[in-house]
Length: 530
View: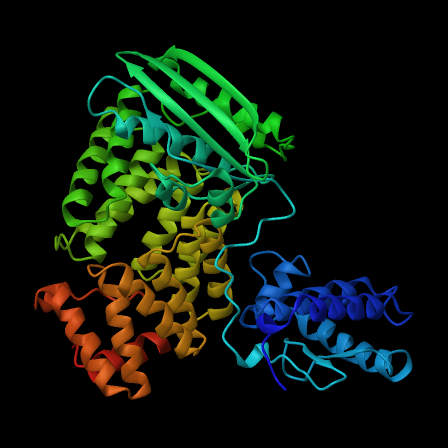
């Protein structure tokens, strides 16, 4: 009888783990720490139904500590260590494991282990869809936190942008700390006005702690109350109330973050302590314009993006040295160009200039580097796009958008394994799915020629938004590639419906690999899109 890991009961799984412990404690493995770590990882991912994640790049980074620029084709560590592991497993079962209740085998040409019980039951995770846990697993090597939307207690009308901006700024500040895992605002802000308990929210986001609070603004005075909750018990670990002038908002944000660092006993690595006290601008008016712009930008519509662009331009005007304002303005302009919401032919180049200026103003601002990498991508600068986004991820390990931008740059260049690795990290930081993230995931699978999973991702993205064209057009071209004509025609009709029949609004593809670009152009013609 054959069954996927999800169908194994707790007794079977406990038996398998006991067998694994016996293998690892044997004379064959006891001094081979690399093979121990590798086998534990392969076993865990296979048993959890994550066989699709077992790629050479992922193993090099997650098991063997290689850097983000690891290339499995150049560095043979994964192939060498997997070969050694196969030999050690054969040696173990020939000498010590002949009576074991389960046999763990690593077939040649695969990174997925076969686990067979002596009664013949064998899970085939490598042949099945991944066992999708509805909620992400909690990060176990550092504290994990989500900042929930703060309550607006202001008597003044129109302060929601400011309250959200304060919570968003705290997320930004904490995301730069390598000793803390922070959920992105796109996911945590979906719990606005939620009736769910702290435990339920933390389970859905896969975190240990929640930060909640309230803000009251009256003229130039603000009052902020914040509470840090232990998601397991629901109890308060720490709470503070602060009152200050608006001019002291940056110092207040730093004080709150440092209090959280102390409460969670987070060690600041390297130069992280230097991040505090520098906010990129001294102009409260410029920062206010940036916050107003971000409130508009997150709505992802033609009207809201145009409004966001105007606010960002105002922020740049108020403080020409504000790097985040330049990056945000460049990003909004580039997004308008990509979506064909503004067909000004100069828009892409102007966006690129703003992104470059942002990095020139602050070369350690991960957000600016990520936007510059994205701008490089759409200017067909393959290597520069990847380098900039790698720098962004290194500077801000919790920045989900830096990860998804890097994934897109890698996929466009034909590096499917790396692209999949980084979009999955982005999705862990932002567990609540979005059309953009599903598109990046589908693109990674498309490059890997895993077309069923690519289609599944594009379909999820299309279902999430009927106004985001990329998922629809890539769904159509993937069907064309597979010769599924009925589905191709249906998705093409949906795509043209979004465009209102205006073919001038067809998004340009971002392939920087010449072979992929040529093949995709051919698919567009087969699909009847061009």
